Image (cartoon, rainbow, N blue to C red; front, side):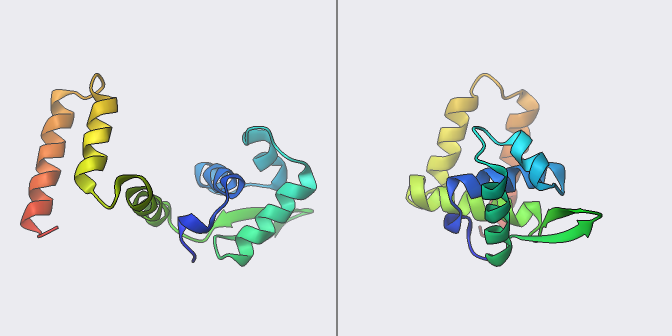
Length: 127
């Protein structure tokens, strides 16, 4: 599969819908993406995503059901890696600092404790 970087904005929107729904038809994708193009354009984009190795489809009566080929966890890691390289100069510290900055009012004591545990575990594993 190609990286998240190889997806256009519209392709990422389509993938978001399909990950959220687990599988979707062209009509379902159309209903859920912002400012959708026409039916034919979405159908064409779904085929492009299949050729790129992001989706597969199965026929369900007269319609196709599109499914992701890559587990959501792996897609999430790929997207975060791209974000890290593109906006944070490969600095995990900068990413965490930005997340803490925008989440300041939303983190509970349990959240802070869990983050501390994750950092300590990563340190012990040499990451």
